[in-house]
Each structure stands twice: as structure tokens, then as C-alpha cells.
Length: 222
Image (cartoon, rainbow, N blue to C red; front, side, top):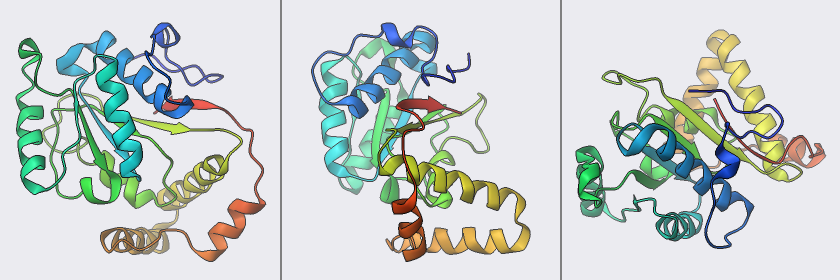
């Protein structure tokens, strides 16, 4: 898979993907990436999980993806989730019915699922808690995955998202190099996520409000 442009966050040829409809910069960026993945890798290899913190955002994304020919499902409730996962795993591209994108809330949808049929995880917003992102990526990056996995993060520069993204990068770096203290912090973050508690502390919020934006506009993958 080629690397995205450092300047725009777009993959080669992605800017040529037409997005039908007007949904706003963020949603259109996610739809464009989804179309590019399917055009580049095909409906079998290009299957993806799309996570957002907001059900309303997933509602809009579901409509936008359908309007642009991307078969997506947004299951609600345990039975609907089971049916959607079965169809997603089946992945019969020839049927033109099975979904190639599974939309889920990041807090509820990332727990306990093994979805190695997908190789891409799209995070619609940056998450300040690295444990939440790790759980989402862990749905596809686990034993049984035969392909490289890619996490695509979408960040609107010059907004609070930019600050959240910077904070998340600092936290991920600390977890990578911080030893036992970092491991304890990660465990605490995962516990908060399971119980629906906010991952940001008061100190984190103050730091975000003090930070300036403008680092970039757009999206990227890694």
C-alpha cells in the first residue's frame, strides 16, 4: 500500500474520487477514503471498520456511503450486530448485498470482536485515550490476520480535534517508552472506557484550550 502525502494526507489518486452529495469536510473525507480503498484493493481486501464517538455522525456516514455506492451497515442492538457481522464476514462481493463497511460507536463497538476479515480501521475523530484506539484497531490486528492492517485517522486542523490529536500522540509515545507507569495509565484508560467514563482529565482539557491549531486540515493513515 503506498504512503499518503505528508502535505495533504491523501493517497495517490484519492483526490480523484468523486463524492456525491454535500455532507461536510469530515464525512466527505471518510467517504472518499472508503471509495479509494475499495477501488484500489477491491471489495474483498478493502473491507473496513469505521468508528466514531457519535451515533449521529455514524447516521450521516451511513447515508453518505450508501449514496456513493459503498455498501455499509450500522447495526443497532445485539441481534442486528450479530446479523451484520455474519454478513460482513461472509463478504460475498458478487452478491452486491453484503456490507464492505461496518459502522460502530468506538466505546461500544470495539469490545470483544474478532473481525480479521477487515484490514482497515477508520477513526472518524481522534481519541485522547490511546486505549480506545488500541481496542478499535485490535478488532482487525490480532491472531488470524493474514494481511497488513492500517489505521486511518481523520483530523480537522485548526479545531479542538487538532489538540486532541496532539495529546493522543503524546500519550501514545509515553505508553511506548514509559515502562510500568505507562502500562498502569493504559490500564486505567481501558477501565474508564469500559465504564463509559471520560478519558480526559481537567488538566488535559486545560492543555487543549491552551494549544493552537492549524497544523493540518484533512486526513491520514498509518
